[in-house]
Image (cartoon, rainbow, N blue to C red):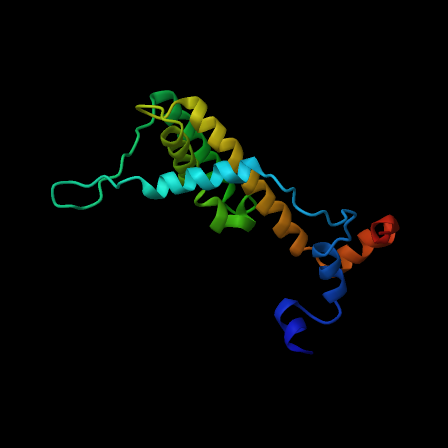
Length: 171
């Protein structure tokens, strides 16, 4: 055994694990376009955010704006929180990604708040902001489940999958 195989598994299962994470691609290199207006807009927005004075209180301590949730948004947030929490238990959909899933509801609230503040919406977080943020966070949560499931695939199962799907090895 060497340091690489010790870190990622046995020498016998190394090819199967490599196959799952180093899939052959078909995209050829293309140079970046000369003009990238979206990158320029992003750079200008980040600069504006960094140049924005921070809100402080009378003791010069940070006093960030914290938007509230409208009642319907709060109800949607509680539903998501409870759904994810129930999936963290034994046999639950999110048991294998507990460290990611445990922060899902909080990340939805953060992303919804960011959307409200970024787009200049005054007041509380509406249900539409929250549901949009939920869609993004749930996608990432399901991607974590999918990726970790691939990495946790037993070597024998990975070998059997390739045996019945030889096209996977064709570049």
